[in-house]
Image 1 (cartoon, rainbow, N blue to C red):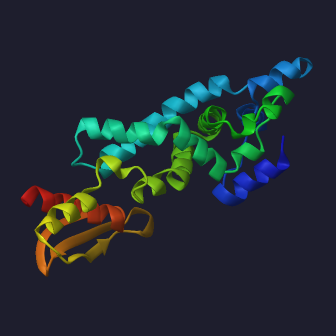
Image 2 (image 1 turned 180 degrees about the vertical axis):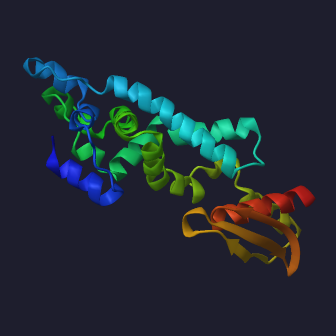
Image 3 (image 1 turned 90 degrees about the vertical axis):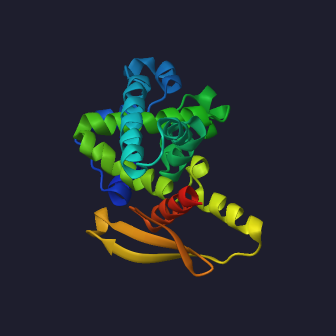
Length: 228
């Protein structure tokens, strides 16, 4: 077991595995297993299968709750953008998982540590191992730390960037001053709700709410677009 990995998981995410073998399996690529058959190790492919399903469930649940106005088609496109290979490989690198995966010499020499498909599988395998070790709540807490803030910040909002659409619509008529005003926020820090109003040249044209200021602004812009 890589003690640097366990230390970083604990310090960055508050995660301490009960079953160290599960964690080691999550970070063991099939190429390493093939080159070390005498060790009788298990690779991470089965864990990847499990983690893929868990990730899709957690992301689907989050999108369903956070974007009540989005139709099924747009929710599906947004989820696809979040769980696709290049997105998950970036999450894996942000978590420094690329530094700890065990690769065979051939895979290492061919740049496997930077390969998006491998890193995507690694991220899903880790999630699968975390689920088996500590349950769905722990897996969700990890995703809430790593993935959900990016969604809330609009990193995957290509399908629902209402603020840009509203600006384009209003400025067709000339220069318009658009202002978003936070009018209220309620709830504990981990479950806060924000209410925002949007104004065009001082006239209120929409209002909305969300679990972050940016989501509340998107909701207000969506309401304004519906009126306009």
